Image (cartoon, rainbow, N blue to C red):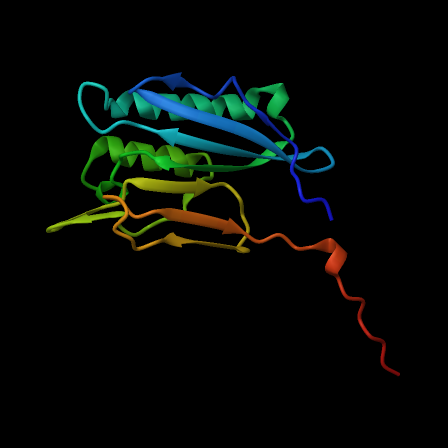
Length: 173
């Protein structure tokens, strides 16, 4: 079994505008002509840089580019993770947060983290997101309760079937 992955950065959607929108995307080869796209995104939470309208437009543009770029035509699985600094728990009360969630859902992305990632005093927020368009239930995701930071670390583990470990069924007579 091969213990390494072939990957390459995807510059056309890796946007880095310091303190405004910071992202890095890589395309990972998972099989013959099969790839998964992994993106890490950061959106600041303090003015004047925390422009959620710009963030929403940029995410929408990234989704459009993924669908239309010929270099990404063999990518149909995408995982996005990061510190979006958008409280998903407020999606019904905050128009721009609702628009962000609508944009995810319209592009077949579901949030895997649905509980607060930051708890302070009498408030709880969901600021750190992992979203994917992978329609598979062979994964674990969650939140690690720790005081190492002001937010809890989040994780996503995808389980792959090891084809070399398949057992042939025993025939009975």
